[in-house]
Amino acid sequence: MADVRLTQIRKSFGAVEVIKGIDLDIPSGEFVVFVGPSGCGKSTLLRLIAGLEEISDGTLEIRGERVNEVPPDARGIAMVFQSYALYPHMSVYDNMAFGLKLARLPRSELDARVRRTAEMLQLTDYLNRRPKQLSGGQRQRVAIGRAITRDPDVFLFDEPLSNLDAALRVATRIEIANLKEAMPGTTMIYVTHDQTEAMTLADRIVVLNAGRIEQVGSPMELYHRPANVFVAQFIGSPAMNVFAVECADGRLCFPGGGAAALPTHARNAGSDLRFGIRPEHLREVEAGEAAFRGKVGNIERLGEQAIVHVEIGKGIVLVAKVDNETEARKGAEIHLGFEATHAHFFDAEDRAIAAA
Image (cartoon, rainbow, N blue to C red; front, side, top):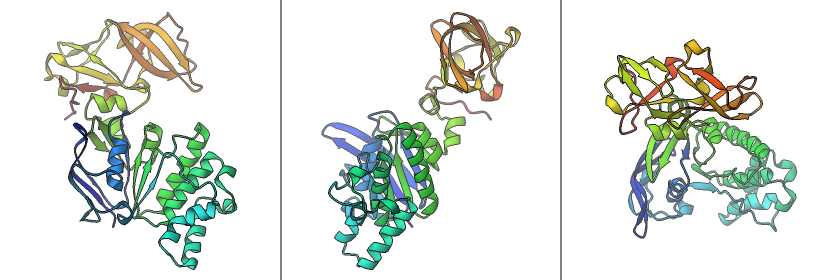
């Protein structure tokens, strides 16, 4: 078992507290992804778990044992960094075997581990090559392979794909997903700023902001039921549209003159009600069905879909993701509607108002 538990974890650099009381339980075998804006503390939190930074306060447990003072190499952890950190003068085989040699593993077991890992990551044909003879994606797979050969209880990934181009990121992401299936008992903690990586790889996502956890949940939980405005606008691309609305006689009154029914669960929120709708949940409709009417600004055509920016009044720009065959034109009027089930509501403290 390789469960990881963080209890009131704090980290300060001098007078600046960057991790502000994190509580998190990660069961054995789970793939957890830390996401959040730059500077939110996600990489620092990963380094605290690895033992590369000293915990200022709180308790870190791995396998039920407190490890705050345990050195990194004794925690049963392997870490894959953003940079490949391979030895340029060594072959792929020797890079992957290096940690095992230091641990004085018997030669036969060392060789078996390296070759088994190379086969898993499709590196068998490259074992005699040096890093400079490999592509970026292959180098990253070697770095992952070096970690696998150590047979860790916990894998830590610190933005491992950020140095790769788009095509290699997709290919290597698939390799990591396959690795997750091949090692179901190994706990994996992954830091990324890429939402696609988070949504496709994670069992659960931890959304961090300014050193605190905003929400923890499965990818679809965070997408469909964000806890607050921050999570609603951080998860999803383009970001959720969120703006203040007025209410009268059980109706929502939108900027620009549109209206819609006000759901029962949002009727007690007071005068500071905020409305949210994801761009992909807006659709073009006839004028009589429109909740929103506005003037088209920019149009970004992305092949299958188009991102349309619509000014609906009072300086509010609504972003809609519609079919690329849209006849919308810059400067023209457009009418948009939505299904009531896709609407989100937030109170004056930016907290989500959940349906009963």
